[in-house]
Image (tube, rainbow, N blue to C red):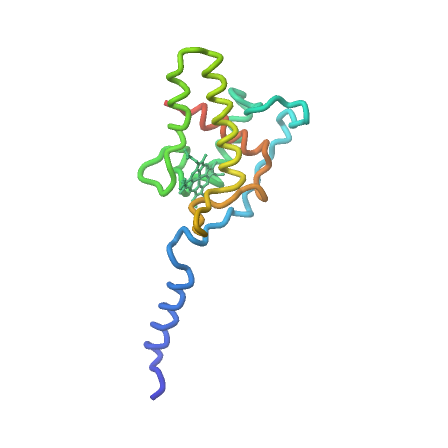
Length: 156
Ligand code: HEC
């Protein structure tokens, strides 16, 4: 007996549901994100380790725009995280801010810089599940540092 149109539609929907699986499994970095960092000092081989744009107003502005294009859908618009799928990124440097010794605090922040850059470039992919897509094909290191500068400017 031929399948009715409704049954065929149901089967198609079931197959699609299987193919797409859990919503996060097929996350990709949005290739349409555009971040122009040409107004900032370019990164060179002699740029010191860590975020070179920390505290710079222009970088913070560029970073806010970049964040809202690329990251907001999982981490919250303007990084205000209210039950989003991704963690609250404004909490990232909390532990560092509690360190009294300025030189140790600086090392802590540098370590977080490195973690931030790598997290964004490589994404968070475990046992084949993409919790967060890798951004290295879409965002330059300079663009990623503007986002970090923006987040740092919003820390409570
Ligand atoms: C598709 C959703 C999604 C998008 C888009 C996304 N993230 Fe994430 N991100 C996550 C999830 C989920 C985690 C937690 C992953 C884990 O560790 O299991 C995460 C973790 C992170 C972490 C590590 C935080 C920590 O404390 O461990 C950083 C940093 C981060 N994201 C930054 C960004 C930035 C910057 C962008 C935009 C360029 C971005 N994310 C875009 C979902 C996303």
